[in-house]
Length: 197
Image 1 (tube, rainbow, N blue to C red):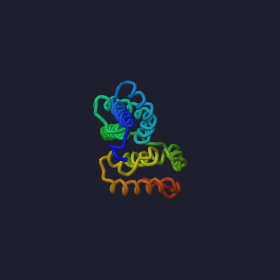
Image 2 (tube, helix red, strand yellow):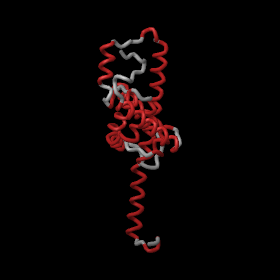
Image 3 (cartoon, rainbow, N blue to C red):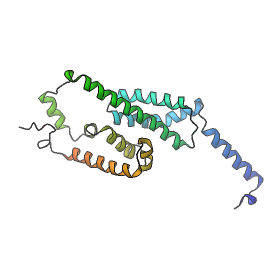
């Protein structure tokens, strides 16, 4: 069917749909609330997985939405809007991780050394997914969550994290392999500091 074959009502309907599509991507208060309702749960879960801290995740989520709104960027689609939000959140999580690392380095004298009983409890729960995820690097947690928690493609993960699709495939493969090794490890032979009896 060509343009010439369309009736006037079909052309008017197509123009109306095009107009609705343009309006749909303008971020007014109602559109933002709907977008927030669709994305907040997934974003908070993603940030909680990446940071390992639910309270920090909620703070970062609010900051991500604030920066997202403040950017006032025109978006091509709902997917583009969502990826932009997750990119902002990923950058905020990275910054928070760097700040925590600096804080740890500056307060080395105040480190909390786990007791023998607490260490034993951690070994007993080694197969727990949350603990296993915590032993991964921040980037590995982010990639695994985006791929399996959010269902993002390798290309989408690459865009969010500033990596090529090939790099995402390799890094995701390594992260999965590392997570599997942690989940299947036996408590007795493994030990990061070699303190077996």
